[in-house]
Image 1: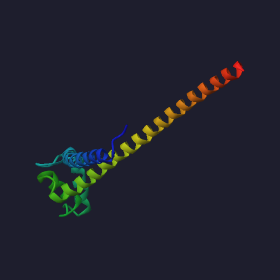
Image 2 (image 1 turned 90 degrees about the horizontal axis):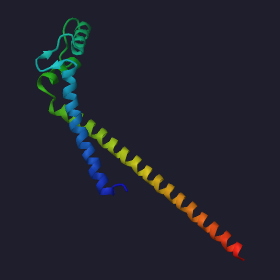
Image 3 (image 1 turned 135 degrees about the vertical axis):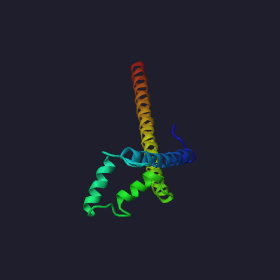
Length: 140
């Protein structure tokens, strides 16, 4: 049997917390993985290609406030409080949504299982009733 409403709320809240923490950790790791590191943009990385494209498009330099500048700042100094809140909120929403969806699907499957048991029980009862009726009719 599934969780009651209070239990579901606790589990969904847990999914939100894990989603938020996971999203912030993943965002930080992803920045480093694509080349936005604490020591600058890694040579030959995706970040280096982004920087090159941005510099070419901007006439030789990377514009202040551009995506490359923001990502490099986050890679060098870590995510800002605002970025942590935004990324955490998105991750928390996704985490809660995934857990709520899994719970909903689980309850649907449980209901179908219970309906199937009732169908089988009804067939067995109908079979017993039919055999009893035939036996009674033969005895008359």
